[in-house]
Image (cartoon, rainbow, N blue to C red; front, side, top):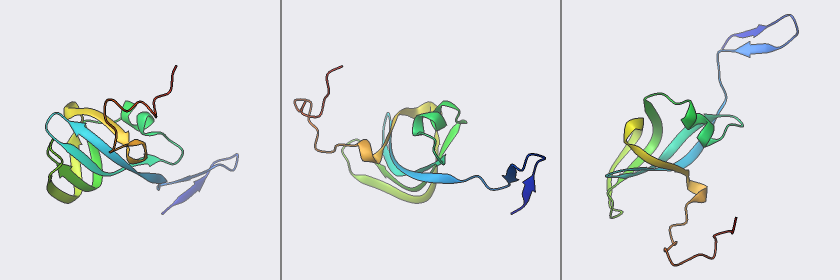
Amino acid sequence: MTLHYDDKGKFFTDYISKDAVQTVIQTSTNRIRGNMYVRAGERVSDYLNKSADFLPITDAEIYDLNGNRLYRAPFLAVNMNLVVWVMPQEKVNDDYTPDDESDVKAP
């Protein structure tokens, strides 16, 4: 890794710090769980708004619409044109039913 300083003392490196965020990605035919990487302090939405054509995912698990696991892979590139939604795993409530409004907050 190289380290460069400018005239004001600010340093630059070849390395960009990123945080792993466990995510759930929905396509029209599958649900994908895995890690996506965002710059330190950045939100998933910030990353998606400037993302390229493919979303790199590590430790990927691909499920059908009935929840049956179809595949596992150490790396998966998801075509952004096929993505319906992306959610951080921490926001997922697998026990939610449409009649359950206990966690819905009024505007």
